[in-house]
Length: 403
Image (cartoon, rainbow, N blue to C red; front, side):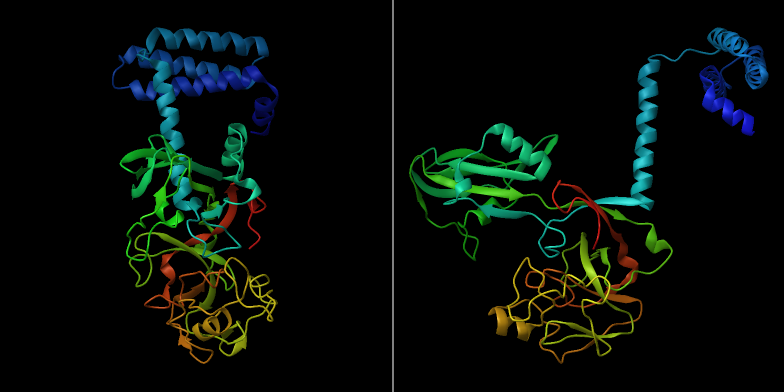
């Protein structure tokens, strides 16, 4: 066996001969019910003879027997029409099976759509460029580079007509190019397309009030409608294997299904940091730290090194590590709600049912999590895996996860 392995590594004719014998045997098995008995016998004998020569023969004998096996296969086996197309189709099917199998058991791609995990993982964000040095439209090569490398899509548009903004359509994607979206804006009866836009463009234009109505904003021809840079959410691989052998640990960033949970968006995936386990008592202190069974979580706990690295003299901020806030602390220090209804103050405590988890987002001032869901905890069976690596865009977060 070892000698065959060495020959396979060192001898190209040996490898090619073995590959041909395997291919001929595969075709023979596929065509066995269509071939005459004498054809089957001739091919089987040719394969057996070739394999014997491949094991002990010289280079010249292997080359000669390989050629002989070619002739026998051409003589007795049926030819497939469009053989090259068939081979490519089989290869595509095998690749699809491999990808689907990997997705089901090993890794699964995921896009971070919202900012609830920031600054650990970033969702889709918008940077208004009006009045800044970046308001000047960059060249197309720069815009294409930024799009494919950094995930930044620049959206500039000037009004093509005089009049009042009348409507902004929903964003549509170009067929086969899902990242290239556009919306139609109607000003003074004139319609024009705006490219490289995210969903719900009107929300980014500051044109929609709380009731969903458009403001009667007047434009003149040449007025800037929008000057914004949209940053794509982090694209990451979710590793699905580890939790088949052990349960998630506190401090790990886990991915789980919503499955119509009260307060969650239906039929989607969430990514949050695991804070509380089944059977534990959890509360959020007024000091912006979580307490588990009376014990304070700090930077010394795995997974919370950055979460609790905040300056206690500064108020909590969106998109910054600010610990975890309850509703009282949020209103007192930040002057607004953090949607922490399940934890109204530092004394409110929740007992987690067995086999369930409590999770919080790292962006404590802008995260819908166990603090706001109708039921704070969810069953552990909904966990599908943990973050593995960010594969796009190529920012400082690219690479293996360190969170």
